[in-house]
Image (spheres, rainbow, N blue to C red):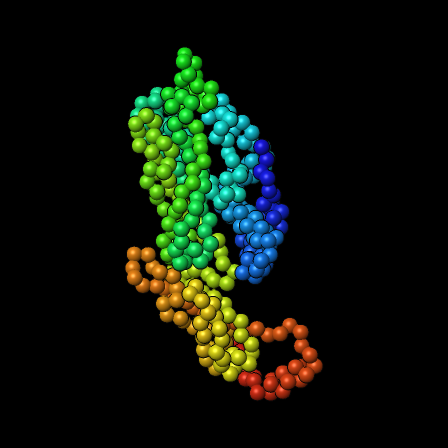
Length: 327
Ligand SMILES: [Zn+2]
């Protein structure tokens, strides 16, 4: 069983790439293919999804190790011989759906209880990842999640027996996996890596035992312009040299839409302008963080002759001791 996609190729990195290299490659490609930058471009949209999927796996040590193992075929028959043979092997397709069930949790709970005695037992908790767009996490949203959920086998009704023999459908385990869909409410201001617990949506219990819980770990899909720092949002805003010198009113995106910001005269790169209350809601409070607009003076790469002669003239007005303190 080989994964369908080559995540390393998708991110254009080597198989030995460090997490830093992976992150950089991802940022570069995500900016290039982000739907906001390529409105209506289906191919860019599909590339963007692939890049996110690749990043989600390769940026997570555990998932990357599992993915590498699948690529090398180490998982062939990895769960073989157990009662779950043929139905619960590692599923790389789960990644393409933006989710991953931690099989260790499922089997740990079931097997740890002394095998399949079919006495009443609480079902195990399931852990799954859900990738959510930056704005859907900042503003709150409802997301649909699909995952595989162990349930009582419909053929033997969880007994594991078919007459005198083991149930052919579930191999005697009494459990099978089925697709489950649920809607999940993401609270506004949810943080990357935080977990939402949905009671009784985990593995079904054995006999009259209650189901375990579903733990959904939120993975924020980075935004091409906005960065989250706790409840605050940062955005780099390019300004021209003359705007930085003279000051300017510029239009800046916020999660509520465009707002006009006054860049004061004499603003150097790195200057932070605060937009109070334009960050994300701070969970458990009524307040919102702030948005910081970070000024970035951009100098043209290509200069015409006239531009250069103006700059030469300008240089006569510049402070010759700008770095004087170093000497
Ligand atoms: Zn069965």
